[in-house]
Image 1: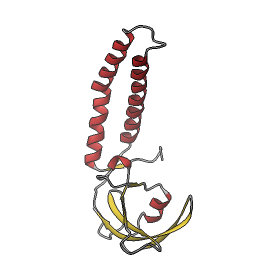
Image 2 (image 1 turned 45 degrees about the vertical axis):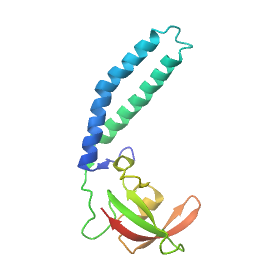
Image 3 (image 1 turned 120 degrees about the vertical axis):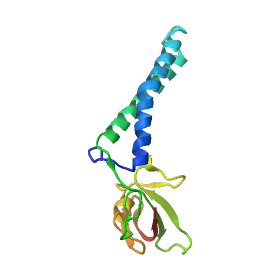
Image 4 (image 1 turned 90 degrees about the vertical axis):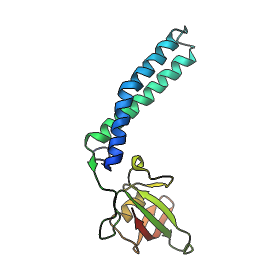
Length: 160
């Protein structure tokens, strides 16, 4: 998926761009100051503050690279249900597993983890279930192979 462009809403694209700008300016300055302050404490081999600051720096730089990669070729999409009611990135999908009670429904946000909608779990378009439901609409019954075997689900609702 690293070679595929990331589909993001304009709001998410702007939020991630702001995060990247903050990390590459204020974030780098703050971490450099923390490393310098930790160095002043003495022996670096047994300096927990120094190692913690370097660890934080590594995580921050990894996030910077992730954001740069994601935003470089991002495609801006609208977060709305298409007129034909099919499942695309940015919609909320309600499903019921075959054999479950009528009211035993699970809801997922369909799209990137970066687009997360509230507390809903994210259903990635590249996951087995995501691939099975992508392009389908309310009322469709689809099957997919999960690590525990084949599962069948019914799409109960698709909404923005």
